[in-house]
Image (cartoon, rainbow, N blue to C red; front, top):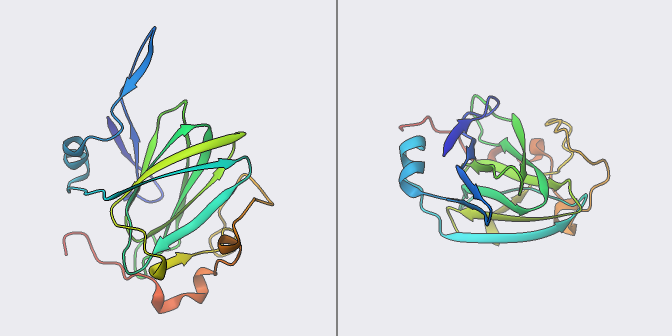
Amino acid sequence: MKFLPTAELPEVIIIEPDVYRDPRGFFLETYHAQKFHDAHGNQMTFVQDNHSRSTRGTLRGLHAQLAHPQGKLVRVVNGEILDVAVDIRRGSPTFRRWMSVVLSAENFRQCYIPPGFAHGFCVTSDCAEVEYKCTDYYDPASELRLRWDDPSLGISWPVQNPVLSDKDRAGRLLSELGDVLPLYTEPGR
């Protein structure tokens, strides 16, 4: 496995697994705790797996949890998405920065988004199935939804009129959240 920090948000990691192909198809490890620990420097405990299926133009996000922040390991098992992470930690040197990466069933890439970052994705194929592991349980009471089109973020989405849930349509601007946002703490503290 290769673990590649992103230029925009070095704490967000792209994982390129080794894919073994033969006439039968392929095999790969989608997660290996020791390899992840060796590359990332800390042990992750994933407690919940999620699976979604969405049609072209669907945008899910931007989501985070305040009281129970989740780290997410995202991968696509069918189709293709543009995956996006945004640093929403007050005081962070990368606050408000975002990054995006194409994840697909063809490229096998995964993205690790740490706690304290908002996450969302847009489906760019006819259909996409996304699986992701979470480091904490879903907690509706601490859910935070940012507007996908927040002008202060300026995210380059591949759609202008995405298919949104009612909750995502009602997302808030980052500037409206102020002290509600998580506080950045330096690594090692």
